[in-house]
Structures are given as C-alpha cells and as structure tokens.
Image 1: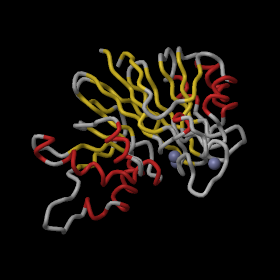
Image 2 (image 1 turned 30 degrees about the vertical axis):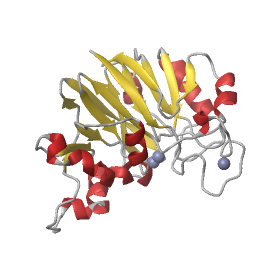
Image 3 (image 1 turned 120 degrees about the horizontal axis):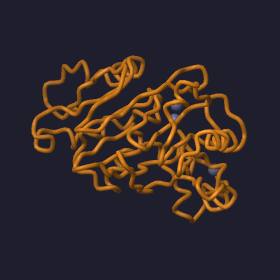
Image 4 (image 1 turned 90 degrees about the vertical axis):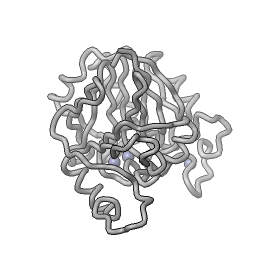
Length: 259
Ligand SMILES: [Zn+2]
Ligand SMILES: [Zn+2]
Ligand SMILES: [Zn+2]
C-alpha cells in the first residue's frame, strides 16, 4: 500500500541553530538549515505512526497538524529521541483515541529508560488526570500496526546496539556508527533509506557524510536522505556536493513510498 513519510526533525541532539552559536549555518536565512531534533512520521490509510518523540515534538506536531497517533516506535533512549513523550498528552486523551491508550514500542533497554525517565507516567499515583495515556510494549521482533510491519534491526551507536527499522520499501537508521552484516542483509532493495550523517569530521557514536556515502554505495537504495545533521553541514552547499540520489533531509520533507 502507498504511504507517506514525513521528516518531523532532521537535526542533531542540540538542534540547529544551536543555543549560543554564531556560525554561518546557525545564522542561515535558509529554512532548510533550521533543524529540530530527529524523528519521522509514517502515515497510511488514515493511520499515523511516529518513530521517536523529540524535545521538539510539540512544535513538530503543530507544524504537521498531527491529529491522531496510532503508535510510537522508539530507536533508543537518548534524550533527543524520547523527551517529547509528555507532549503527546493532548493526542492521548479518550476524546481523541476513542478510549485506548497509545501503544509505545521499544526494545527492553529503551523501555527501561522510558520507565525511569517517565516514572510519573508509568508508576502514576497522581489522581487528577492530565497524564499521557500511553502503554509500553517491549519488543524483540517485528511490530504489526494496522496491516503494516515495522521490523527492528540492530545498529551500533558507539558500543551500544540500538534499533533501526525497515518498513516496506523504506528504512530509518539514525544514531549509528556501524551497521552489522545481518542488518545490512535486511536493507536490500530499498526505495528510501534514511542514514545518520552528523558531519564530515569523525565522531565516536555517529556516522559521517563520507561513511554514509559508502553505505549508499553498498546498499544502492533508489533514494537516500541524510539526517541527525549538525551545524557543520549547510543545506544547499552540502547537497551540491552530494550525488543526485543522495540528499540532506530537512524538517517537513514528505515522501511517498510502498509500505
Ligand atoms: Zn540522537
Ligand atoms: Zn552553529
Ligand atoms: Zn543517540
């Protein structure tokens, strides 16, 4: 079935512009250089799934006019990927969901972080309502949501394995420095591939433009988009240096694909 992928945020953990920074990209007038924290939204047949809820979720949800969420899938428990969970509140109330809680899917490691950070939600003793109505489902295999399958696969974020996801002809790999061979094998024949590409200069827990270009050469997806982008990469100049089928993602980018 046809589906839409929307880039909610394309920036690195501190966002671009970065607080207190006077560099060219942070001061750029090009709206593509304004990058909120990294997340995507997948929609099909009236259903909406988020991958990650960033500290910028509120702004992203207002910008993209999100009216309903069927599920949230997490890549890992770092602050820039989870801290917006509290802001799903208005979308989690019964008048919006029709009653049920919003399911959250995460690996056992990530679920543990969510339970700790959001203890007030998961071990609620607050009697006056107002809490996000969500329920956590630890996963160790594919997630089925309204006829779509999201398959987790490990990628290494420094030493730590986190989740990347393939769904239909698309895959989303953020926050990785290495991809194990078993995961590479699951990334064949893609229409759309999202890859972490923080900057040019090497980083211990993130991929770079050069490293991700090598992965593109190996996997040969039809289209590739780089994400989790720092203020080192000006949108227009970087795109001009990339091959035609590889682009920097930007906030609000919308793509159609087969789910
Ligand atoms: Zn991150
Ligand atoms: Zn800057
Ligand atoms: Zn991370």
